[in-house]
Image (cartoon, rainbow, N blue to C red):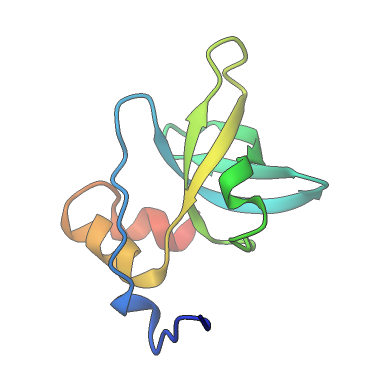
Length: 106
């Protein structure tokens, strides 16, 4: 079995919508280790960590749009549970989860 060839990121079919208790955010800075600073749609800046299933499979860079789940006992911390590609960001804008200005200017 070889690697799956992806010609364009928009052809990837897997798409995760935000559920209750999850927020969209934009990566501001990679803080080192597994810590990433993210500005969420509720205008709070959170220190996030990459969840275990994404740690070795997905590279997260600055200005990426990610899905975070805040911790119950420490709301200024969160887990990153998904990274969106450009095709999915366009779909989120069409469905009204984020505004076009938010994803560009934060």
